[in-house]
Length: 470
Ligand SMILES: [Fe+2]
Ligand SMILES: [Fe+2]
Image (cartoon, rainbow, N blue to C red; front, side):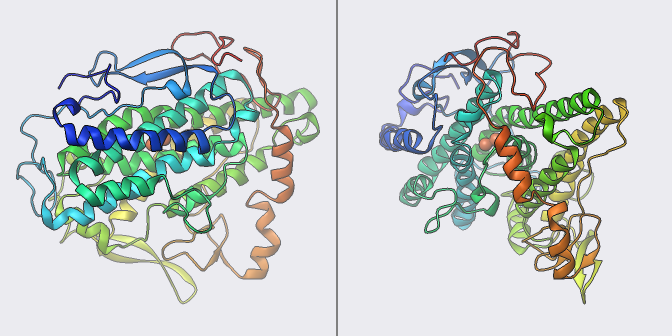
């Protein structure tokens, strides 16, 4: 389908041929803009930013790079090209044609899936809204804004589905996306991790590394959906999402590099007095963000997830590449299980364990970046290695919740936890130190003292390019 890039709402869904839908979305648009003005980036939002804007979905070039001021950003609706003759790859309807409309029996379940995903998108923009004030460089500020505008576009993606396929209920849900707010006591965002603050740039990098990666796995399993418009929407969102995780992975790598540099320069492990972030503090931030992101996958066993799968609404990561019956009712696996104060396992059907399977895939992916950071540490002669904590550490959802478990997987009592927790999660002192380093740097090419420069710029521009015109 051709892209209508000049339309009020750029799109490749033939919006101009559906006047009612177009009008409905055009009446949601000012509400979105108002939300952006109030709860989007707190500073520099009028400045020209070197942003990537989605303009097409094709293989050769889907994005345009140019300076735009964010209120003029073209938030559009883009679905990946349809796959001709696509069949349902799993569940009870395996082998049938995919659906172009929502089957009545799955209407509320699909709506729920879309709402939960959609809610995370504006949530992260809200969580990150203060960060532009303390960006460690213009390069980083630009990356923050890139992530923010794309999360805004992801909200548009979900809102389009709600408006187009769910009638009145869908329109109400689209409005509610702008009414819930991250951390709001009365009307919070749906998922826990999206109500946590992102108070500093170290948190931002870990958030984009771990929490945006949860997004990748959720989107990838919805890309498998029998509901083809959802599948195509998620497929395109994944292209943008990759950059968000890149921001996290390279951001942390640059902090590690700078810390190593300071350690060598001053011949010490304690770089705090020299304006750096110690490796053990990085480990604590990692522990926090990984553990709250694990919660996003839900309980180890889940009837909802099983029902979604059997119905064809949400598959596994890379469903079609897997060699099994794609029904999973008679295949088994072990899941963690805490019983009588002991961490063990129990065997359940793979169908019941879908959340755990997705969490495993996610963890494996998380490990890759950690291996890269650790290689940099080893090459620099450091014997410190970053590690993912045990899956039971600091968990609020599933079998581990309500138990005190150390990062190495020991079941401990409250007193032991209380005396050790400052060594495992960012302490008030750690947060205060990190916060003290957060000073905005707005001179092209210059970096704050706690982070190394990136190895390359964006879209072949040099690192000292004026990514944000200040
Ligand atoms: Fe997103
Ligand atoms: Fe993202």
